[in-house]
Image 1 (tube, rainbow, N blue to C red):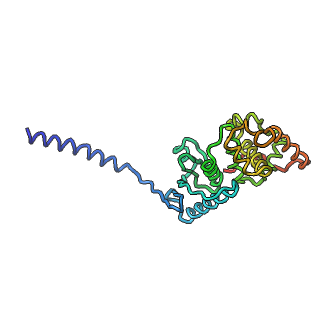
Image 2: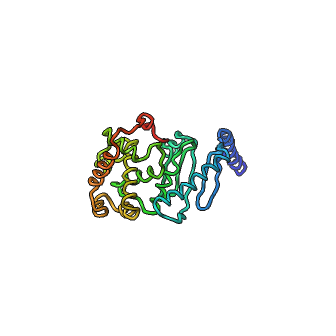
Image 3: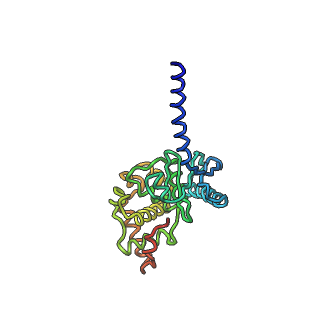
Length: 260
C-alpha cells in the first residue's frame, strides 16, 4: 500500500509539471527599460532607443519646471511614475481609452504614448496642479482641462486667435455646456475655449484668485472675481470683437484634427 500510494503521488505531480512545461513555451517576454531621476521613475518599451528615452526624460523634467512656473508653485517633491506606452492601442488595452496621454494624480502615475507629438506638458499640469491644489469640483472641469491646454500651447495659433475665431464663426460652447457637461462637448472647441478663459483669468486677476477659485466651485465665482462668469465672457467677447475687426485667418480642417 505504501509503494502504490507513493507511485500515485509521484505520477500525479509529474503529469501537470509536463503540461506546465509545454505551456511555458508559449510565453513571450516583453522587456521594459526604467530609470529613476530625482523623485520620478520613467519606464519605456525596450524597443525605444536610449537616445529617445533621454529626450523624453528631458521633456518631462522641463515640463515640470514650466508648469510650476505657470502656477507659481515650487518644490514639487511627490514621487511620480511616468510610463510610456507603444501606441494608442496599447493605451486602450491598459486604460480602456485610446488617449495619447493620461494622468492619475491620486495614484501619482502618468501615461503617454511614444510619438512625435505626445501631451507630456498637458498631463504634467494635471498632475502638478491637482497634487498641489487638490481635485477641482466637477463644475470646474473646464478650468482643469483649460489650464492643462493653456500650459501645453500645442497649436500654431494663440489661444486668443482661436477664441476669436470661435466668436466670429459662432462656435463657442454655451457656458452651461462648458460648466455642467464639459466632456460631452466638441473637445477641439471646449479645451481651447477653456484655455483662453484660464489665460484671461490668470492674466487679468492673478494666480492667487485662480487658486482660490480652483478650490471652490462655480457658485463662488462672483464672490472671488467680483463679476459673474457671464459678465467676464461678455467682457472678453466685446474686447476681442473690437480688437479683431477682420476675420481670423484660420485653417479649421487642420485645427480640427487636434494636436495629438
